[in-house]
Every structure is written in structure tokens, then in C-alpha cells.
Image 1 (cartoon, rainbow, N blue to C red):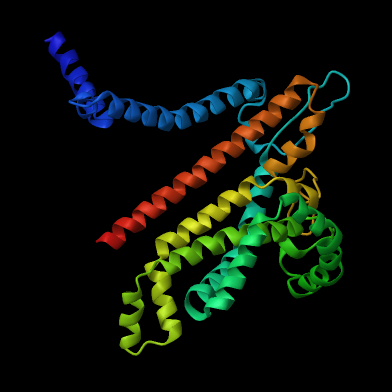
Image 2 (spheres, rainbow, N blue to C red; image 1 turned 135 degrees about the horizontal axis):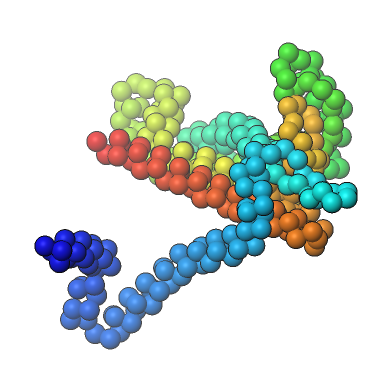
Length: 336
């Protein structure tokens, strides 16, 4: 009886293992060339998982001191004191960094998604070939600009303009909202969000344009033949391409969360749990770029930055996983 209890799980395991890797078809009546090619392809595909696993292992190893020292307080704490006086230990935490990353990424999406949607619809539905070619080239050019150039442009051009003209106007109009109260700073969370929105706009717009262009011509012709207007046709295209639009937005969100150089130059780099968008702030990526060279001692300093890198990596994987789940969910609904 004991052997049968063990035998069934083992048999089930080997059957599932064979089904996953298709071992019978791999070794059954194949010449050496085909077998070698399939094994090489399998090894290359597996290398991605190996690299990701090694990244996790190495980052966790370097961050282990911070993980064991601060525990869950690292996620929910609001202090960052790398050099303490006397016998006090340094204090590190990540809540303001997570808050800054989420706020800047969300505002960047709120600004860039409507503009990207309009650009994509104009290129795929309403514009001629010449206009389409010129605007598409400009959108792709925006995507090719290095992030440090965006940062320099933000420091010398955008910040003075926003601080003098835009932010006072926003504060007068939305004075009753906490996000628009307080002293106005040039380098701020709002400035970082605006620069970030410009950086992710070409990515979202390009993907949406390709998605809208892939809608079958027969769908457009069918609704136009029923007397639909251009706007109604565009609504149908958006509805038909819902999965691709969601994928484009999630791709832009992933870019926004991981962006480092430009936002480091314009966000102000102040460790605080801000309530006003006009205050300086910090993000997960910007604090790593700004303080990594100074983290030689104490040992908890570098370990804390590695733990922030671990949080950033997990956040990127979570965003990607959510995107996969959403796309699959809508794919099943469309197929029904």
C-alpha cells in the first residue's frame, strides 16, 4: 500500500514532465542535426530563465543584510538616515520611494495615454500618407532621444517655464486640492511626471498605431457601409483593438517605472512622503542612481540600495504579469 501511494505521484510527475518537454517527440526518429538544433534552441530559451534566476539570487544575496536588519519596516518606514551619530544604527526605508514611483508613473500615464491615443488614431484613421510618414518619423525620433537629453532639456527649459507660468496657474485653479498646495519648487514630482510622460509617449503611440493599423479593412468598410461616421468608425477600431491598447499602456507603465536618468535630473531628489506635486521627491530608480557611488559604508547602505533594486525588479515583474493576465482575459472574451 505504501509503494502504491508513492508510485502514483511519481508516475503523474513523469507524465507531466514528458508532456511539458515533449521528450518522446524530441528523441524519436530524429537525425543528429535536428536534435542538435532543438537542443540548442531549448538551451537558449532556458538561458533567459537562468539569467533571471541568477539576477534574483545575486540581488537577494547583496540585499540580505538590509532584509534581515530592517525586515518589513523597510517597506513601510519613512526615514533614510545613512550616517547616524554616536552608537545609533543607520536607518533605511522605501515607502517614500515607492510612493514617488507610483505617483510619477500614474501622472505620466494620465498625460501620455490620451495624447498617444489621439496620435495613433490620427495616423491610422484620419491622415494622408505624407502626413503619416512625417509624424511617424517624429514619433520614432522622440523614442530615440537619450534620457539624459530629456533631463537637460527639463532643467534648462522646462523647469523655468513651468515654475513661472504653469504651476502658479494650476495652484490658482486647483487650490482646494492637496496635490496642488504648498510652496512651488522647480525640480519637483510634477516636473518629473511631465518629462516622464513625454518619454513614454512615443512608445505608447507607436504600439497603438500598429495595433489600429492591424484592424482588418473589412471591419471599417462594413461599419461605413451602414452609415457610420468617421468618429463611430474610430470607436469601433478602439473597441476591436482593446487588447493591444492595454498592452501598449502596460508597456508604457513598465518604461515609466524603470526610467532613471531623466527623472533623477528633474525630480529634486528629496526623501520625503510628499503630499504636493510641487514638492521635490524621489523614486526607486533615482535614489539608486543618485546615491550608489556614496554607499561604500556603512555596509547597510549598499545593502539597502540593493533591496530597493530588488523591489524595483519585483515591481516590474508584477506589472508585466498583470499585463499578461489582462491581455489573456480580454483575448478569451473576444474569442467567445
